[in-house]
Image (cartoon, rainbow, N blue to C red; front, side, top):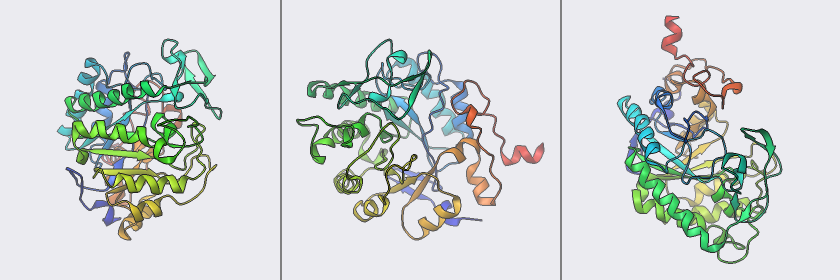
Length: 362
């Protein structure tokens, strides 16, 4: 077997996984009207059940926060029923699946949310991209600054989403604190210019995150909760004056939670910020460290061997290769992902990527 360290079993909190090849959360915009998961999504996830853990795509904790047109939600009974199809299919295929729960904050748009203005820690818009809406690609709008009094309601939204995820049959949840969405907007000083209890110092900027973690772990227990962070990623106009300091602070405070894992993106898609956040996090953080962003099987295997981290979440390789662990084990060639179908409707580029077995028969 190639890359043996990738195929060592391990304990992620309360969940034992058979290998360290995780599927990263990947927005695919295939939910049905009403942001309801469907049979096609159940097929997609069950095809990839050989991964050590599947982390399902960013899923809205509250109505009115759509950022991708057809992403799923977890706030309605119909959505819970839709997700039951997914979790049942994955479990029948022998897999394990967490749901990534998420609030888009300023990365949403009125055109996707019945005219509702986005909310954020500060009234600062995203400026380095545009958003796809039913009316075409348009600029982001300036969000409304949340009042301190509104924040507990959003924390409660995360708690209810965690409760709904449990009802839907997930094995746990991952809190989305990365990539310029609401929690990340509070964490980083480029997007959080507010004063008061939730702004200014790193302790205050992190307050919302830890309130969300408290709410979510009260539902699941910390050993079935993960957290994703991206201290360097400038996606969605994100920046921080001290990403290393932020990383060190969060790593230390997260030791109090005994999470199933901490999931960290190691770099910046747009190369606006540089630095090594993984080394200080590994030095400080006591729990399982999952990493993500551009890893090959060879690099991941070597780094797990030397103790740099514990597991890797693969994104586009898993998107295009439903049998990714088998391909790694055999050193087989990988399917190339078709970027034109990443967010398109229908099964093309979603459930039709061939496995090695299917290629052998063809």
